[in-house]
Image 1 (tube, helix red, strand yellow):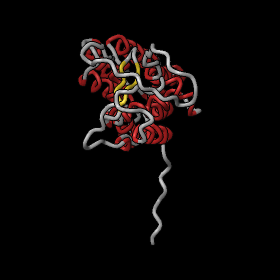
Image 2 (tube, one colour):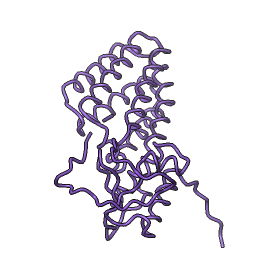
Image 3 (cartoon, one colour):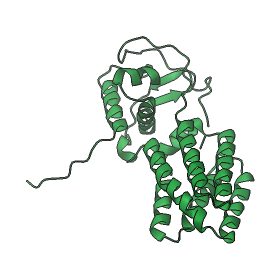
Length: 259
């Protein structure tokens, strides 16, 4: 029998697998509430962002429903569930990769930027300022801003890399997470951070450009790391059973919205 490559399992997938199995085993019945994000992190010995990624993966599958300010509820298993494998990488891993790669690119761009490059950034920023996010048009402008900076280096491989990394957010998994944390205010913050990157590049200050880009993408990670805002206390102990009924979705405000 031929050998096949062994693919390392992402941590959030392992967490999702364990929670999915507990749901399938009846530990958490349909309509019941899971432990809070904080309690799951403590019980599993992992970070809250890793738990958050796993919960979003399960919500995309249709196995749970997250109700901000209330809790995490088990839902009826869909007839054709979408597996957690739909997202290859978690958003925090992707954003960290972008922080490292694009920070270096911004520093180099500051030494190479021409007046027309700065004008192109100003054009994108003007259009971003005129769009009230979150929406697909603003995400497209966000991508364009980062691509313009990469293009200043005149290296097609780097430009393609930046585009590829950005495009990883265009999937149901990332969109579900963004839906909880993106808002007009977080997009305004992101646009201000973009302006700081532009100003550092225009000033030909490579160190400042690197720092501004890394701050922007680090802040993006922080925005996605905020709590779901659960307010109902959960029982103490490792992975406690939770059987409280789910609130009526028609009477409970369920979310929204970040970058």
